Amino acid sequence: MNARFFSLVLALSALLLGCATPEVIKEVQDRPVDELKASENSKPIQFTKIVIKLKRGDHIGALETGLLCVPNSDLTWKGGRLRVDSDEFTDAFKDELEKYSFKTVGDTNALFEDPSSWKSEILVAGLVKDLKANICYPNVFRAPSKGEAYIRVDWQVYSKLDRAVVHSVTTEGAGRVDSATPGGDTTAVLNAFAQASRNLLADAKFREIVSRGGETVRETSFRSGDSIVITPGSAKPVGDKPEEWPDAVVTVFAGSGHGSGFVISDNLILTNHHVVREANSVAIKFDNGLQVVGKVIASNSGRDVAVVKVDATLPKYFRVSRGALPIGSDVYAVGSPLDEKLHSTVSRGIISGYREEQKKTLIQSDVNIRPGSSGGPLVDKSGAAVGIAVSGIAINGDFQGINFFIPIDDALKALNAL
Image (cartoon, rainbow, N blue to C red; front, top):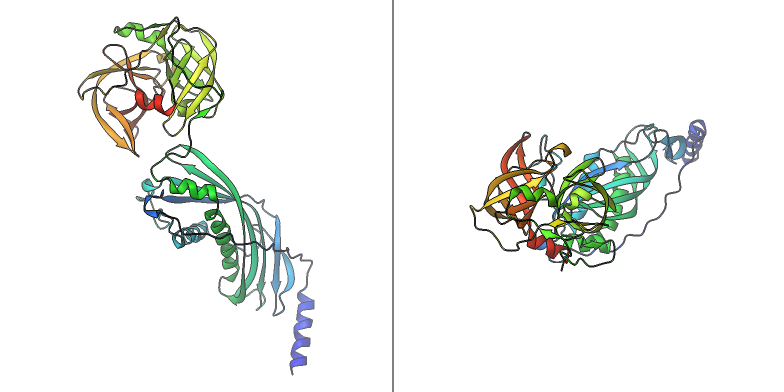
């Protein structure tokens, strides 16, 4: 009876056998993962998305059938039975985080805005560059199924405090399901992804980033190798008359957008990191229409400040005031709001308060600024710069008169300026 059954299986396998080529599933070692120490101080993590960078029709393995799992047809990306939902990847990633005491936020069941996402400090996304799977259906294309899978993920780690990708790393994973079960094909892939996730959690740099609760990851980068020494040289400070201030305010062009900046010595201009971003050179346009190229010599994305150096001796600069003005003090913002044609716009307001955001102090003011004002000075009535325009609150596109500025003292400390 057993011999007859075995002959029947062989005959059926021969009929089903096609030109299928199974993939060799690479064995991947599990890197040891320790629970995250001092987890109460660690940065909350949100997994944002997984992108599978495979072309439709790419060969990723074989579909196998019968009790002997005989290769029957090729398995191609988006051309076979294999289906994995993005939420399943997210859940698998969160499961691994929580096993090892990493903080995680994000609700895959939220139909609209996820109210917990604001708590996240670290965003993680994965790009799948390689995926292989051999899937077996013992009952000839009828569930249940089993199989084996391999995955390679290029991870990017984004810090909200630094406003930048602060780490990139590649990990691998392999998984298998040895007993046919409903959804066994998907489980094999998710097991492989789970191992790739664990190997990310074992990465020393990733762990160091997550452990730094409430701190930025990126330090000030000195692209020229020089320290910043602020000296007036032959330049003269602007006075207390607002009509003088545009002489020391510039428009900064980087990429497709623009921001503002202001002169703090005879050849140094202070602005935001998010204005210059990763550019090494930016265009600087003065109030009189003169345009020059400036070199970004230092930046700190965590404090959102940068310094640009120009090969010229500038005639006017702003003195800086490192003290905190009393609430209610008159202040002025100068910059290029919305359009470069509106360069050197001066607006007036008061100091509304001082706020703490992610362990950083911000000056709040009702002085009028708009996109394009970023990097411009907040000036007191004596003509000294006390802050740098950085952001404002808008609701449904309407600005609320609640705007924020980086204190000059904090900016210069972040840049190690002397």
